[in-house]
Structure formats: C-alpha cells, structure tokens
Image (cartoon, rainbow, N blue to C red; front, side, top):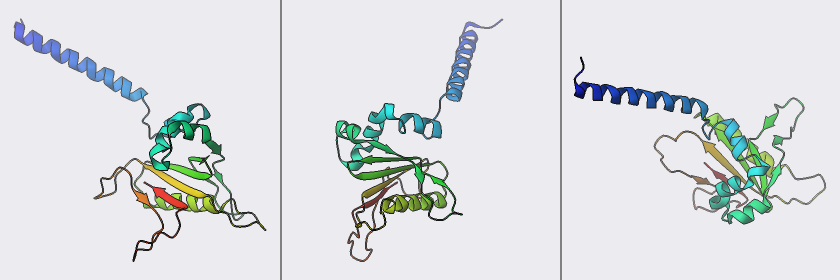
Length: 179
C-alpha cells in the first residue's frame, strides 16, 4: 500500500508526464517562424502586409501605416542573364517607396547561402536598367533572416554597406545589407 506522501508524488509525476506529452503534441503541430511555410503565410502574403510592415519599420525608418500602404509585391524570380544559367528565386521581393527590399531566409550556417543572397541583391539592383535608357538605380536592401549566430557575434541585427575600409567613405547609399 502506498503512503499518502508517495501517492502525492506519484500523482505529481503522472501530471508532469501528461503535461510533457501535451507539449510534445503541440510542438509537433506548430511551425517555427523560420519555416518556409510560415514565412510565406506571415510575410509573403497580400492579406498580411501589416506583419511585413512591422518587420520592416525599424530598418527603413517609416511608420507601419505608411509602409503598409506603400508595399508592392514584386515577382521573386531573378531574370537569367544567360540561357544555361540556373534559375533563381528569392524568398521575397517588395517595393516600398522606390526602394526594393529583398528578403532571404536561411536556416543553415553556410557562407555560400549569404554569398548567393549577395548575388540576388546585385541582380535586383541592376535588373531594371533597360537598353538605351539613362542609368537610374533604385535603392536596394537585402535582409538576411538567419536561424543561427555567427561565431563570436551576438548582435541581433548587423548593418552592412559598401565602404572604403581605409577611411569609412560610403561608396553608395543605394545598397544595404542586413543580417
């Protein structure tokens, strides 16, 4: 026969096990925000422009309402430059007030992913130049959403530009990269 104290401990253990099983069931049915499915539902969705606006507000220094009204979704296929070139698709491209914003999400800590994303931003940056037209490059921002930390760096947001390393002169303010 169980003592009253042992019975209480056993009941607590049963309850803890039940809670653990319930949490496991819930976690099996919840998609992380870094999944492609959740990314498309939350950010790449005309019905949820305000979510994207909240995400962008601190990066482009505009208020949410202004961004929400100005967001225009752009095709996310990158035009091929050569026939045999591999097709490329960006996770999301939007235009906000004459600025292209390219958003890429990476779950694996591979430098090749970030280098590929840099290729995307430069293709978008130069992609609207037409033959026999004046050069007029639009500001283009790349936001890399990464699901890992760089070794030795704990900053949440890193801000990159093309800068002369010797004196800090910014080459152009039309290209910005955030990680």
